[in-house]
Length: 485
Image 1 (cartoon, rainbow, N blue to C red):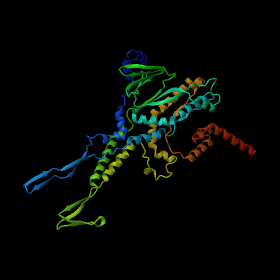
Image 2: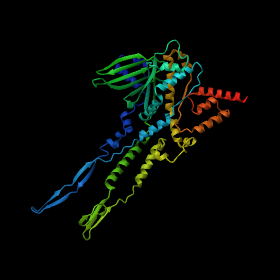
Image 3: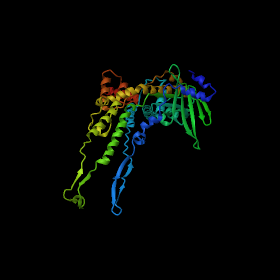
């Protein structure tokens, strides 16, 4: 296999792009198929007119009309019309993926770090980069894309600073030397539903040494152009395909590491329950048709009707001798439909370890699902988060490692600290916190000598101002000691 340097050295751009695509070790996701499963309006119950054709309804039955003058009998054919059947789509994939996303990153991932004096500045800068890039929301987009689209990539780049470093300097003293950095870090997501075809390039040892993205754009005349972008550890290349491939730009990104973080899964999270969802949609739609055409009562008349009189409650039907009238009743119970629907619906959520969170399911729980009880009830969801963390955890860790390196690249004052600081990222499953339980646990652990006071404050959830809290606690204790003397 050719190395990335050998491929980029080729003069033939078509051949170059061919090899860059061949560097992908996994199959390219089928975007159309995945989006058809994700969007309820594209489910086969809605779009497949052959599998779910229109229903032919008889308006008038065929009848014979005898003409006394001619003595001939004319057959008048029946009248029919075609109507659309009920097409009920269920957004099961969206609901399950959204719930799993909320449990995975609904609580912001924890960054475990104990920086020394030389590392406090870069750690504070790291937190501000994450905050200014709205990473707590971007994490949800990433997990949602990864679960539903099979893959997602995050690309980091620099833009002109518009006050980021000035605001950070106001918080952290002695942050800079004589000059202030000119750039700040920004990010963008790439994924199949966003119109991107992603081509990670791995070397023989399994390391990603380059990353390519193919996408389409339109110029001002609505002319569509295919673009191909490749990012290496040093340079960003961009080509455009109009009449032929042409290079439009090549520039050094200035980072020490590849500024792309990528994650992939072999199939969509809800692929295993697709057949269940298809069956549920067919069941609901067919049952709705049954209701429409058979639920409302039909009057059955035997013999001749002499007279109809009255309105509403006083209606009277007068029949001739030997005649009868009765409503056709629906004796078959609909319980089998209900049982099958509930079984399949519950199975879809159970197979994906997804709790059915709705008002109907939770309205009777009261305070029962707080604290420790919540962890037991939603143990399946938390186990699913642990499985998800096998891929998303390393993704988040690679992002933090890159940002630390990038901060050292754009701010020379952080260069040394970027090589020594150690930040571990841990995914924390979403849960309902009982504050009194957490405080009681923290107090018991600190008084029992199991935790330090700092760890107790962190466990109680007051992570934003740990140092301030420790200082205030020490001042309060010193004041109490002076009063007792």
